Length: 214
Image (cartoon, rainbow, N blue to C red; front, side):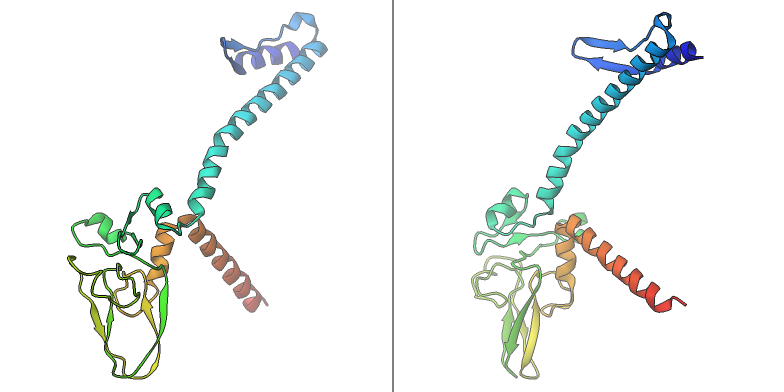
């Protein structure tokens, strides 16, 4: 039975080398015990070699994942990531999923992937920058929107209060913030967004299990 096992192992296991390809074949004539030990050692070497090749293959992928998980913060980093950057204020142009399918619509620049919190005065006219290139965000400076398809949007608050304005310029409720900036952030950073989603689901499941557990 040991000789039969050796012949089967010798016909299955394959060891690539720099000089060509060689099959590992152990002779049964040198003794069953000696042959089994040699086969076990060969199998261990094969597993180690295969594991080393797999590790070398995965390392660049993991390194790229870590680099991709880091959100760009400077105009140079945004350009290196493949995004167009505004020459006026350095904000990146991040196409929405809709714009990716229909690229004919103008895409604004996104100076901030989050809200601008501003205290506004009652009955004061504020001109919200819709192009994302103004240097006085979130309001227009009459320079950023010049020679573009975007126009500033007037906002007149009814009360003196603190208002959150959209910073990504993709909000359907513009000029007010409604959470769309976080979706743009998730589109740019899928790995951290997946981690946040997993953590939220895990905590929610843990709390609901604790609440409804008999």
